[in-house]
Image 1 (cartoon, rainbow, N blue to C red):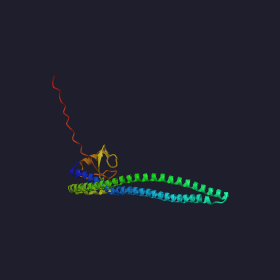
Image 2: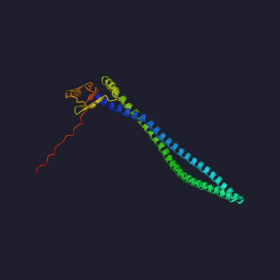
Image 3: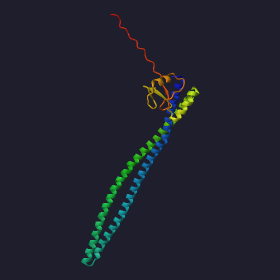
Image 4: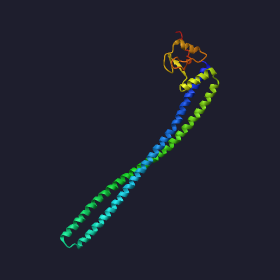
Amino acid sequence: MNDNLQRLVRVQEIITAVDAAQERISAIPAEVGRLEKELLAAQKEIEAERARVQELGKDRRRLEMDLMGVEAKITKYQAQLLDVKTNKEYQAMLHEIEACRAERAALDEKILLEMEESEKRHAAVRGLEEALERRRRETSQGKVRLDAETQELKGRAETLEAERQSLEAGVSADYLQPFLKVARQRKGLALVAVRDERCGGCHVRVMPKLIQQVRRATGLIACDSCKRFLYVPDEPPRANTVAAESPAQ
């Protein structure tokens, strides 16, 4: 493989790497947004739970006020028992007192249930507060990590682009311009290797005659099917195997 092709193979690797870096950089703001959205959701959840706790407190205070009113009625009716003149009035007053006592029992039960529910809600709030604190730490750490990743990717892309410019400066125009044109059309993949008599781009079989032309070519030769430019990778040097002779017995 001639020097122009070797340089273009590396240029293509750089294009692919830079595109991947840019794609990752473009995806990072969405990840930051997801972290912030999850944190906001956790904050809203705890705010909603706190609001429920406050409503339970208001409900319990209303019930306690109602209970105080019922207790006052019972006290008043018991005092009036001393003033009734007839048995009918006495029985009616006892009926009112029993009704108030039943109402008091129902209110006591409701207040007890409200207290139990409030305790559960307070425990839930404490759990959510701990979860929210963890989420805050994870969000902060995640944003720092993603920012560091962004800066690292930008630095890597800049280094690769500098290498690309240096390589392209050493490539003949009759190689470089066609390569760049096809690279723009094929998302950076303009050069494909021929392996096992197949095009590395479309995997269509490449005839042996064309493979030989690619090997000998002093310019770019395209695949008949996908129109990408073909190259035959240099084979790695084979190690010489030296047979060791056994000493004569």
